[in-house]
Amino acid sequence: ATERTLSIIKPDAVAKNAVGAILKRFEDAGLRVVAAKMMHLSPEQAGGFYAVHKERPFYGELCQFMSSGPVLISVLEGENAISKNRELMGATDPKKAAPGTIRADFADSIDANAVHGSDGPETAAWEISFFFSQMEIASRPA
Ligand code: CMP
Image (cartoon, rainbow, N blue to C red; front, side, top):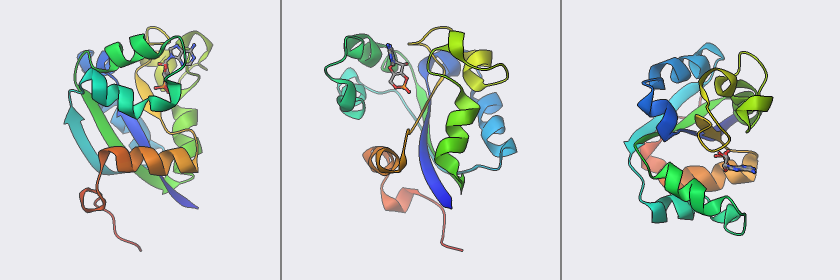
């Protein structure tokens, strides 16, 4: 089925000037960018987005890192967009990410791991609406 997923190109990958290279991987895999914006999040905004991880030991560092520089936030649309994006990203920890995945090629550590992608349909809907209004998503039903 056609799905939408939220993608974030994280501060480490933006600092490496890898935005274009990463977006190309999405496009080459048949995903379409239907919304996008560059933001420099505040720690509070990052904390709101990652609220589900509030009790995890890495939450503070995660919010710090995600607000350390600009990020490119986008909505990707396509056939099985959620799982396709997760395959393209590879495992959360770049040391465990399969060769050829975005994290294997661009990530430095489990914190600076280049990209975020929604992990399921409900998360995707929540994450997309956290950053984008309906009017900011430029796709029309076929
Ligand atoms: P992301 O997919 O953006 O979701 C939460 C982020 O927390 C994750 O990628 C990692 O960058 C970061 N993180 C740091 N430590 C851990 C950990 N032990 N387990 C999962 N995520 C972690």
